[in-house]
Amino acid sequence: MNHRHTPGRRAIGAAAVLAAGALALAGCAGEGAGSSSSAASGQSGAAASSDITVGVAMPTQTSERWIADGNAVKEGLEAAGYKVDLQYANDDIPTQTQQIDQMITNGADILVIASIDGTALSSQLDAAGAANIPVVSYDRLIRDNENVDFYVSFDNYKVGVAQATALLYGLGLTDQDGKELDGRPTGPLNIELFAGSPDDNNAGFFFDGAMDTLKPYIDDGTLVVKSGQTAFDTVATLRWSQEAAQKRMEDLLTSTYGGGSEDLAGVLSPFDGISRGVITALQGAGYGPTLKEGLPVVTGQDAEIASVKLINDGVQQSTIFKDTRTLATQAVEVVKAIASGQEPEANDTTTYDNGVKVVPSYLLEVETIYADNIQQKIIDSGYYTEDEVKAGVAEGK
Image (cartoon, rainbow, N blue to C red; front, side, top):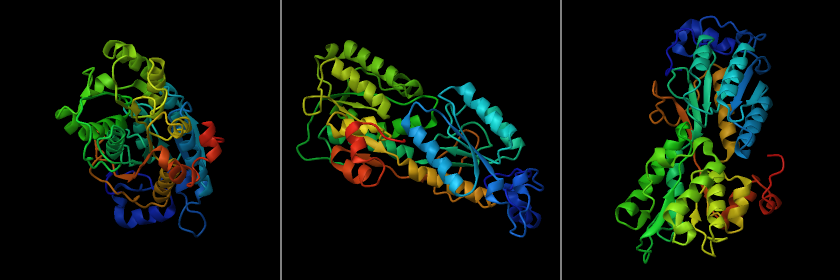
């Protein structure tokens, strides 16, 4: 891979090893890989996929989104013939570092990592680099280390744009595409802002995309952040905690909105768990209980089934649908390319600087879910069934 110039970089498969002899491999393969996966298999010129173990590190099982991701990646890799070591760390950084250490010790050939804290894995990535183990950063960019070979994610800046556009649409200022409406409210409309976890690289992209979209309306006075809390560090929610979001919203209502007696039009929320915490606080203060009955517009992300039900019931206004099936499929394609000694396809080679290098990336598009497109986007696509949406419980996810 031309983005990495480590002479000892391992290639998985004898075909890449043979190519290394002719081309010196410019950093995408090693001169003599030591793992069993680098051995030739018969006359095929490449290692059998069954000889390759992929370590998959996911951050938590407390979010159904990550359970779905882990299962989809594992199933896709196993269908391609790879051995898979899937581990969840339950949002505990020491647990995740130990799990990745163990994957390396056990001889993983490729690592796919969705980090809890994108800055906390330096020693593990150094060990992976020393062992010539390629690392694929999954959805959350791993920072401050050169041993990150590829990044698969969604277009995270556009996620923030989509969240803010959903908020503007819900407030009657634009249509669903973000085009300003004639006769729109002139304001001032009070809103509050929530951001994601400060240790997740994506959270900043979400917030920047949202704030760039909201800024013209804040600047002209149409929107007012009544609490004055607009800095990322102030509105961030550590570990994306629903409980922390509920507590902060309750505090905002007490300090800024007369305990619920003053008008609040909308809340920018970057994640469905945060959204549900915000909604619980709002309903507890007497707003709503539905949008039609005066509940403020609350955005979201990840199309978690509990929030899809709330949207269907007219409670939460929207969520950003990041189809984990497509992300998992892309991660599997990246692993296949690396395993065969090829360079994975990237559609972004400029945006994701992890502090040491710009990491080649493949970014997927997202969709905004409202009550009127749940059937088309969620149910008809097979992501959830109609019964799951009505119940707010996803079977097997």
